[in-house]
Length: 58
Image (cartoon, rainbow, N blue to C red; front, side):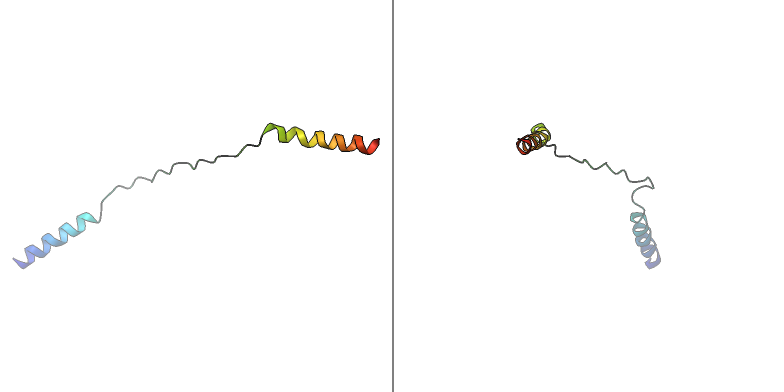
């Protein structure tokens, strides 16, 4: 009777060790959010440079 109980306990313990499957885990791609600057910043710097050049030339 002890051997039967031991065999039952070992078979229950062995079945829980194989939970799941062998499929590769699916990783979702990481979302990267890029902060955009305003379009005014791209044009103000060259205009400021032109004003400085014009002031230096006069």
